[in-house]
Length: 405
Figure: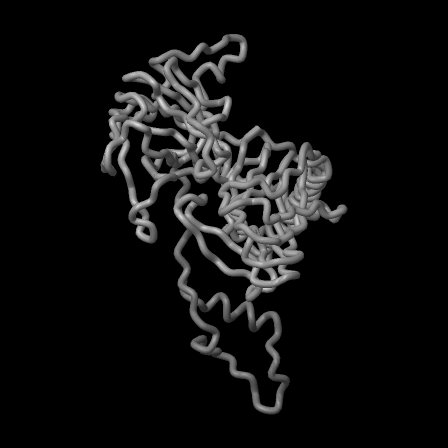
Protein backbone atom coordinates (compact mmCIF):
# COMPACT_ATOMS: atom_id res chain seq x y z
CA UNK A 1 0.00 0.00 0.00
CA UNK A 2 1.31 3.45 -0.96
CA UNK A 3 0.30 6.99 -0.07
CA UNK A 4 -0.05 9.19 -3.17
CA UNK A 5 -0.19 12.99 -3.03
CA UNK A 6 -2.14 14.95 -5.67
CA UNK A 7 -1.56 18.70 -5.89
CA UNK A 8 -4.45 21.11 -6.44
CA UNK A 9 -2.98 21.92 -9.89
CA UNK A 10 -3.00 18.28 -10.99
CA UNK A 11 -4.90 17.90 -14.31
CA UNK A 12 -6.84 14.98 -12.83
CA UNK A 13 -8.81 17.55 -10.82
CA UNK A 14 -11.39 19.11 -13.15
CA UNK A 15 -12.59 22.59 -12.12
CA UNK A 16 -15.94 23.85 -13.41
CA UNK A 17 -16.55 26.45 -14.56
CA UNK A 18 -12.99 27.46 -15.32
CA UNK A 19 -13.84 31.05 -14.46
CA UNK A 20 -15.32 30.00 -11.13
CA UNK A 21 -11.94 29.24 -9.52
CA UNK A 22 -8.88 31.34 -8.68
CA UNK A 23 -5.30 30.19 -8.16
CA UNK A 24 -2.98 31.32 -5.38
CA UNK A 25 -0.48 29.94 -2.89
CA UNK A 26 2.06 30.56 -0.15
CA UNK A 27 5.27 28.80 0.87
CA UNK A 28 3.54 26.97 3.74
CA UNK A 29 1.33 25.07 1.29
CA UNK A 30 2.27 21.96 -0.69
CA UNK A 31 4.23 23.12 -3.76
CA UNK A 32 3.25 26.64 -2.68
CA UNK A 33 -0.06 26.47 -4.59
CA UNK A 34 -3.80 26.55 -3.75
CA UNK A 35 -7.08 26.89 -5.66
CA UNK A 36 -10.12 28.70 -4.23
CA UNK A 37 -13.71 29.00 -5.48
CA UNK A 38 -14.70 32.44 -6.73
CA UNK A 39 -18.44 31.81 -6.47
CA UNK A 40 -21.06 29.49 -5.02
CA UNK A 41 -21.86 26.42 -7.11
CA UNK A 42 -18.31 25.99 -8.45
CA UNK A 43 -17.29 22.32 -8.51
CA UNK A 44 -14.04 20.33 -8.58
CA UNK A 45 -14.22 16.68 -9.70
CA UNK A 46 -11.56 14.06 -9.00
CA UNK A 47 -11.47 10.42 -10.21
CA UNK A 48 -9.05 8.02 -8.52
CA UNK A 49 -8.27 4.41 -7.61
CA UNK A 50 -7.66 4.00 -3.89
CA UNK A 51 -8.84 2.47 -0.63
CA UNK A 52 -9.20 5.88 1.05
CA UNK A 53 -9.00 9.57 0.18
CA UNK A 54 -8.41 12.75 2.20
CA UNK A 55 -8.62 16.39 1.08
CA UNK A 56 -6.50 19.08 2.74
CA UNK A 57 -6.61 22.83 2.42
CA UNK A 58 -6.07 26.22 3.96
CA UNK A 59 -8.99 27.75 5.85
CA UNK A 60 -9.32 31.47 6.39
CA UNK A 61 -11.38 33.13 9.07
CA UNK A 62 -14.94 33.54 7.80
CA UNK A 63 -18.22 31.78 7.12
CA UNK A 64 -17.99 29.29 4.25
CA UNK A 65 -19.15 25.74 3.48
CA UNK A 66 -17.96 23.15 0.95
CA UNK A 67 -19.61 19.76 0.29
CA UNK A 68 -17.92 16.50 -0.73
CA UNK A 69 -19.94 13.81 -2.56
CA UNK A 70 -18.19 10.43 -2.87
CA UNK A 71 -19.35 8.08 -5.64
CA UNK A 72 -22.61 9.99 -5.98
CA UNK A 73 -23.55 9.45 -2.34
CA UNK A 74 -24.88 11.85 0.27
CA UNK A 75 -22.57 14.88 0.45
CA UNK A 76 -20.44 15.57 3.52
CA UNK A 77 -20.20 19.28 4.38
CA UNK A 78 -17.16 21.11 5.76
CA UNK A 79 -18.12 24.28 7.63
CA UNK A 80 -15.43 26.91 8.12
CA UNK A 81 -17.02 28.90 10.90
CA UNK A 82 -15.80 32.06 12.52
CA UNK A 83 -14.57 29.96 15.43
CA UNK A 84 -11.38 29.38 13.44
CA UNK A 85 -9.11 32.23 14.41
CA UNK A 86 -6.79 33.33 11.64
CA UNK A 87 -5.46 31.24 8.75
CA UNK A 88 -4.94 27.51 9.31
CA UNK A 89 -2.83 25.46 6.87
CA UNK A 90 -3.02 21.75 6.09
CA UNK A 91 -6.52 21.50 7.52
CA UNK A 92 -8.36 18.22 6.73
CA UNK A 93 -11.48 19.14 4.77
CA UNK A 94 -12.73 15.62 3.98
CA UNK A 95 -11.79 12.10 5.16
CA UNK A 96 -13.44 9.17 3.39
CA UNK A 97 -12.54 6.32 5.69
CA UNK A 98 -11.98 2.83 4.26
CA UNK A 99 -13.14 2.22 0.67
CA UNK A 100 -13.28 -0.85 -1.59
CA UNK A 101 -10.18 -1.04 -3.74
CA UNK A 102 -11.22 0.29 -7.15
CA UNK A 103 -12.25 3.35 -9.12
CA UNK A 104 -14.03 6.15 -7.25
CA UNK A 105 -15.13 9.72 -7.89
CA UNK A 106 -15.25 12.75 -5.61
CA UNK A 107 -17.15 15.96 -6.38
CA UNK A 108 -16.30 19.05 -4.29
CA UNK A 109 -18.81 21.90 -4.43
CA UNK A 110 -18.53 25.40 -2.98
CA UNK A 111 -21.91 25.79 -1.25
CA UNK A 112 -21.69 29.19 0.41
CA UNK A 113 -19.16 31.88 1.16
CA UNK A 114 -16.20 32.30 -1.15
CA UNK A 115 -12.45 32.81 -0.79
CA UNK A 116 -12.33 31.17 2.65
CA UNK A 117 -11.63 27.48 1.79
CA UNK A 118 -8.50 26.91 -0.32
CA UNK A 119 -7.88 23.45 -1.82
CA UNK A 120 -4.24 22.45 -1.30
CA UNK A 121 -3.64 18.70 -1.86
CA UNK A 122 -5.25 15.24 -1.76
CA UNK A 123 -3.81 12.08 -0.19
CA UNK A 124 -4.85 8.61 -1.42
CA UNK A 125 -4.01 5.19 -0.02
CA UNK A 126 -3.66 3.05 -3.14
CA UNK A 127 -2.28 -0.22 -4.45
CA UNK A 128 -1.68 1.37 -7.89
CA UNK A 129 1.14 3.88 -7.50
CA UNK A 130 2.68 3.76 -11.00
CA UNK A 131 3.27 7.26 -12.37
CA UNK A 132 2.13 8.97 -9.16
CA UNK A 133 3.93 11.05 -6.53
CA UNK A 134 4.53 9.01 -3.39
CA UNK A 135 4.22 10.84 -0.08
CA UNK A 136 6.22 9.96 3.07
CA UNK A 137 5.34 12.11 6.07
CA UNK A 138 7.83 12.36 8.92
CA UNK A 139 5.37 10.33 11.03
CA UNK A 140 5.17 7.53 8.41
CA UNK A 141 5.96 4.10 9.86
CA UNK A 142 8.15 3.33 6.82
CA UNK A 143 10.80 5.78 8.07
CA UNK A 144 13.48 4.11 10.21
CA UNK A 145 14.60 6.52 12.96
CA UNK A 146 17.71 6.02 15.07
CA UNK A 147 17.90 6.99 18.72
CA UNK A 148 17.81 10.71 19.48
CA UNK A 149 14.93 11.87 17.29
CA UNK A 150 12.08 13.84 18.83
CA UNK A 151 8.66 14.87 17.55
CA UNK A 152 8.70 18.63 17.21
CA UNK A 153 5.88 20.63 18.79
CA UNK A 154 2.83 20.50 16.51
CA UNK A 155 2.51 23.36 14.09
CA UNK A 156 -0.01 24.05 11.35
CA UNK A 157 2.89 25.07 9.10
CA UNK A 158 4.05 21.44 8.68
CA UNK A 159 2.25 18.97 6.43
CA UNK A 160 0.10 16.73 8.62
CA UNK A 161 1.07 19.21 11.41
CA UNK A 162 4.15 17.15 12.41
CA UNK A 163 7.95 17.34 12.10
CA UNK A 164 10.99 15.55 13.60
CA UNK A 165 14.22 16.99 14.99
CA UNK A 166 17.37 15.39 16.37
CA UNK A 167 18.11 16.07 20.04
CA UNK A 168 21.73 14.83 19.87
CA UNK A 169 24.77 15.66 17.79
CA UNK A 170 24.19 12.82 15.33
CA UNK A 171 21.01 11.06 14.25
CA UNK A 172 20.01 9.06 11.19
CA UNK A 173 16.75 8.22 9.47
CA UNK A 174 16.43 5.81 6.53
CA UNK A 175 13.76 5.37 3.85
CA UNK A 176 13.33 2.52 1.38
CA UNK A 177 11.25 3.43 -1.68
CA UNK A 178 10.49 2.72 -5.34
CA UNK A 179 10.95 5.69 -7.62
CA UNK A 180 13.02 7.70 -10.07
CA UNK A 181 13.20 10.96 -8.05
CA UNK A 182 13.45 11.91 -4.39
CA UNK A 183 12.78 15.30 -2.78
CA UNK A 184 13.00 16.18 0.92
CA UNK A 185 11.31 19.10 2.71
CA UNK A 186 12.20 20.49 6.11
CA UNK A 187 12.61 23.54 8.29
CA UNK A 188 15.07 25.33 10.56
CA UNK A 189 15.38 23.91 14.04
CA UNK A 190 15.59 25.74 17.35
CA UNK A 191 19.41 25.96 17.16
CA UNK A 192 19.50 27.36 13.62
CA UNK A 193 20.83 30.91 13.74
CA UNK A 194 19.91 33.42 11.08
CA UNK A 195 19.05 31.93 7.69
CA UNK A 196 21.91 29.58 6.74
CA UNK A 197 22.16 28.39 3.14
CA UNK A 198 23.23 24.93 4.34
CA UNK A 199 22.34 22.76 7.28
CA UNK A 200 24.76 20.69 9.31
CA UNK A 201 23.30 17.53 7.82
CA UNK A 202 23.77 15.30 4.78
CA UNK A 203 21.92 12.64 2.82
CA UNK A 204 23.14 9.63 0.85
CA UNK A 205 21.23 7.46 -1.62
CA UNK A 206 22.25 3.89 -2.44
CA UNK A 207 25.62 4.21 -0.66
CA UNK A 208 26.69 7.12 -2.87
CA UNK A 209 28.85 9.90 -1.37
CA UNK A 210 26.82 12.08 1.04
CA UNK A 211 25.27 15.33 -0.22
CA UNK A 212 25.00 18.36 2.11
CA UNK A 213 21.47 19.51 2.96
CA UNK A 214 20.86 22.97 1.49
CA UNK A 215 18.21 25.65 1.47
CA UNK A 216 16.62 26.17 -1.97
CA UNK A 217 14.49 29.34 -1.98
CA UNK A 218 11.56 29.52 -4.39
CA UNK A 219 11.53 32.39 -6.85
CA UNK A 220 8.03 33.47 -5.80
CA UNK A 221 8.88 33.21 -2.08
CA UNK A 222 12.59 33.99 -1.61
CA UNK A 223 12.37 34.10 2.20
CA UNK A 224 10.03 31.38 3.45
CA UNK A 225 9.83 30.44 7.11
CA UNK A 226 8.92 26.75 6.60
CA UNK A 227 8.41 23.99 4.03
CA UNK A 228 11.91 24.27 2.53
CA UNK A 229 12.96 22.06 -0.34
CA UNK A 230 16.25 20.85 1.11
CA UNK A 231 17.23 18.02 -1.25
CA UNK A 232 16.23 16.77 -4.71
CA UNK A 233 17.76 14.21 -7.06
CA UNK A 234 17.06 12.20 -10.20
CA UNK A 235 17.42 8.41 -9.96
CA UNK A 236 17.19 5.39 -12.18
CA UNK A 237 13.75 3.75 -11.85
CA UNK A 238 13.77 1.03 -9.22
CA UNK A 239 14.31 0.37 -5.54
CA UNK A 240 16.45 2.79 -3.54
CA UNK A 241 17.49 3.53 0.03
CA UNK A 242 18.07 7.06 1.33
CA UNK A 243 19.76 7.82 4.66
CA UNK A 244 19.63 11.30 6.26
CA UNK A 245 22.30 12.11 8.87
CA UNK A 246 22.25 15.19 11.10
CA UNK A 247 25.43 16.44 12.82
CA UNK A 248 24.07 19.13 15.13
CA UNK A 249 21.27 18.92 17.65
CA UNK A 250 18.00 20.70 16.88
CA UNK A 251 19.29 22.51 13.81
CA UNK A 252 17.20 20.74 11.13
CA UNK A 253 13.53 19.72 11.18
CA UNK A 254 12.39 16.91 8.87
CA UNK A 255 8.88 17.42 7.47
CA UNK A 256 8.32 14.93 4.58
CA UNK A 257 9.70 13.15 1.51
CA UNK A 258 8.12 12.77 -1.94
CA UNK A 259 9.23 10.37 -4.68
CA UNK A 260 7.98 9.95 -8.22
CA UNK A 261 7.00 6.34 -8.86
CA UNK A 262 7.96 4.82 -12.24
CA UNK A 263 5.18 4.62 -14.81
CA UNK A 264 5.56 0.82 -14.86
CA UNK A 265 6.90 -1.58 -12.22
CA UNK A 266 10.58 -2.36 -12.64
CA UNK A 267 11.17 -5.77 -14.24
CA UNK A 268 13.73 -7.77 -12.22
CA UNK A 269 16.68 -8.98 -14.23
CA UNK A 270 16.80 -12.78 -14.59
CA UNK A 271 19.63 -14.65 -12.89
CA UNK A 272 21.42 -17.74 -14.03
CA UNK A 273 19.44 -19.71 -11.46
CA UNK A 274 16.30 -19.12 -13.52
CA UNK A 275 17.72 -21.64 -15.97
CA UNK A 276 18.00 -24.23 -13.18
CA UNK A 277 14.58 -24.58 -11.51
CA UNK A 278 15.80 -27.22 -9.09
CA UNK A 279 18.27 -24.84 -7.39
CA UNK A 280 17.73 -21.70 -5.31
CA UNK A 281 19.54 -18.36 -5.58
CA UNK A 282 20.49 -16.36 -2.51
CA UNK A 283 21.41 -12.72 -3.27
CA UNK A 284 24.41 -11.20 -1.59
CA UNK A 285 26.44 -8.04 -1.78
CA UNK A 286 28.31 -9.15 -4.88
CA UNK A 287 25.06 -9.49 -6.80
CA UNK A 288 23.25 -6.37 -5.66
CA UNK A 289 24.88 -4.08 -8.24
CA UNK A 290 25.36 -6.57 -11.10
CA UNK A 291 22.40 -6.24 -13.46
CA UNK A 292 21.99 -8.92 -16.07
CA UNK A 293 20.29 -8.69 -19.44
CA UNK A 294 16.60 -9.59 -19.47
CA UNK A 295 15.52 -12.77 -21.25
CA UNK A 296 13.66 -11.82 -24.42
CA UNK A 297 13.12 -15.44 -25.60
CA UNK A 298 9.52 -15.83 -26.71
CA UNK A 299 7.51 -18.81 -25.43
CA UNK A 300 6.86 -21.61 -27.94
CA UNK A 301 3.68 -21.06 -29.92
CA UNK A 302 1.12 -23.76 -30.79
CA UNK A 303 -0.01 -24.26 -34.41
CA UNK A 304 -3.83 -24.55 -34.72
CA UNK A 305 -5.23 -27.95 -35.75
CA UNK A 306 -6.97 -26.40 -38.76
CA UNK A 307 -3.64 -25.08 -40.03
CA UNK A 308 -2.06 -28.54 -39.69
CA UNK A 309 -4.93 -30.19 -41.62
CA UNK A 310 -4.73 -27.52 -44.32
CA UNK A 311 -0.99 -28.05 -44.74
CA UNK A 312 -1.44 -31.85 -45.00
CA UNK A 313 -4.24 -31.62 -47.60
CA UNK A 314 -2.31 -29.08 -49.62
CA UNK A 315 0.76 -31.31 -49.65
CA UNK A 316 -1.30 -34.34 -50.76
CA UNK A 317 -2.92 -32.39 -53.62
CA UNK A 318 0.51 -31.18 -54.73
CA UNK A 319 1.86 -34.76 -54.83
CA UNK A 320 -1.15 -35.96 -56.88
CA UNK A 321 -0.73 -33.14 -59.40
CA UNK A 322 2.98 -33.88 -59.64
CA UNK A 323 2.28 -37.60 -60.29
CA UNK A 324 -0.30 -36.82 -63.02
CA UNK A 325 2.14 -34.46 -64.71
CA UNK A 326 4.88 -37.12 -64.61
CA UNK A 327 2.63 -39.80 -66.18
CA UNK A 328 1.49 -37.40 -68.93
CA UNK A 329 5.07 -36.47 -69.69
CA UNK A 330 6.13 -40.15 -69.96
CA UNK A 331 3.26 -40.94 -72.35
CA UNK A 332 4.09 -37.98 -74.56
CA UNK A 333 7.77 -38.96 -74.54
CA UNK A 334 6.87 -42.48 -75.74
CA UNK A 335 4.77 -41.11 -78.61
CA UNK A 336 7.60 -38.81 -79.70
CA UNK A 337 10.10 -41.67 -79.50
CA UNK A 338 7.92 -43.92 -81.70
CA UNK A 339 7.48 -41.19 -84.28
CA UNK A 340 11.23 -40.61 -84.46
CA UNK A 341 11.89 -44.32 -85.02
CA UNK A 342 9.47 -44.42 -87.98
CA UNK A 343 10.91 -41.23 -89.46
CA UNK A 344 14.42 -42.69 -89.83
CA UNK A 345 13.64 -44.01 -93.39
CA UNK A 346 10.29 -43.26 -94.95
CA UNK A 347 10.73 -46.09 -97.44
CA UNK A 348 11.57 -48.79 -94.91
CA UNK A 349 9.54 -50.32 -92.11
CA UNK A 350 11.69 -50.64 -89.04
CA UNK A 351 10.41 -52.86 -86.34
CA UNK A 352 10.72 -51.45 -82.87
CA UNK A 353 12.60 -54.55 -81.74
CA UNK A 354 14.88 -54.70 -84.84
CA UNK A 355 18.35 -55.87 -83.93
CA UNK A 356 21.17 -53.51 -84.89
CA UNK A 357 24.61 -55.06 -85.24
CA UNK A 358 27.77 -53.06 -84.72
CA UNK A 359 29.81 -51.99 -87.78
CA UNK A 360 32.67 -54.32 -88.78
CA UNK A 361 35.76 -52.36 -89.89
CA UNK A 362 36.86 -55.22 -92.24
CA UNK A 363 33.72 -54.90 -94.34
CA UNK A 364 34.67 -53.53 -97.83
CA UNK A 365 32.90 -50.37 -98.85
CA UNK A 366 30.16 -50.68 -101.49
CA UNK A 367 31.00 -50.07 -105.17
CA UNK A 368 30.91 -46.47 -106.26
CA UNK A 369 28.04 -45.63 -108.50
CA UNK A 370 27.71 -42.23 -110.01
CA UNK A 371 24.16 -41.08 -110.04
CA UNK A 372 23.11 -39.13 -113.14
CA UNK A 373 20.02 -36.97 -113.06
CA UNK A 374 17.33 -38.34 -115.41
CA UNK A 375 17.29 -35.20 -117.55
CA UNK A 376 20.94 -35.79 -118.56
CA UNK A 377 20.27 -39.30 -119.94
CA UNK A 378 20.13 -39.43 -123.78
CA UNK A 379 17.66 -41.93 -125.16
CA UNK A 380 18.91 -43.56 -128.37
CA UNK A 381 15.40 -44.61 -129.21
CA UNK A 382 13.37 -41.46 -129.15
CA UNK A 383 9.70 -41.83 -128.94
CA UNK A 384 8.07 -41.04 -132.21
CA UNK A 385 5.81 -38.07 -132.23
CA UNK A 386 2.21 -38.91 -131.88
CA UNK A 387 3.00 -42.09 -129.94
CA UNK A 388 2.34 -42.76 -126.26
CA UNK A 389 4.92 -40.68 -124.27
CA UNK A 390 5.10 -43.15 -121.44
CA UNK A 391 8.06 -45.50 -121.61
CA UNK A 392 7.72 -49.18 -121.49
CA UNK A 393 9.46 -51.23 -118.87
CA UNK A 394 12.01 -52.37 -121.49
CA UNK A 395 12.93 -48.79 -122.30
CA UNK A 396 13.42 -48.00 -118.63
CA UNK A 397 15.66 -51.00 -118.24
CA UNK A 398 17.64 -49.91 -121.33
CA UNK A 399 18.19 -46.47 -119.82
CA UNK A 400 19.43 -47.95 -116.55
CA UNK A 401 21.92 -50.18 -118.43
CA UNK A 402 23.39 -47.15 -120.23
CA UNK A 403 24.27 -45.38 -116.99
CA UNK A 404 28.01 -45.62 -116.39
CA UNK A 405 29.20 -47.53 -113.42
